[in-house]
Length: 131
Image (cartoon, rainbow, N blue to C red; front, side, top):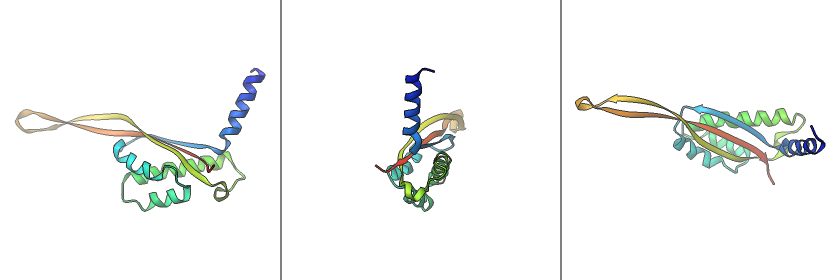
């Protein structure tokens, strides 16, 4: 590895020290329903986001809370000596992409079949420090 490549890799590592990421692939929920909950916690402090998700009535909030806790654990493993309260962690980015669809047929009158599309999604959550 050349010296320039090593220096840029080191700079990237230092820049990503305060950023943590968590993924949940093939979550069995509609992306549209998940985005409703994801939009609520985008840009919010971690403690407040956890309380929002805990007391939300939406079913998607349980899955998103699990992803947020995973991102916090990832941040803690990166920064072992640091404290979460002092770090002022914020939900920097949350995006929900559609994943594969399971296609089924439902019997309908007169020999027809109605399509059922069971949708799923991919959740990506990125934590960062407050600027």
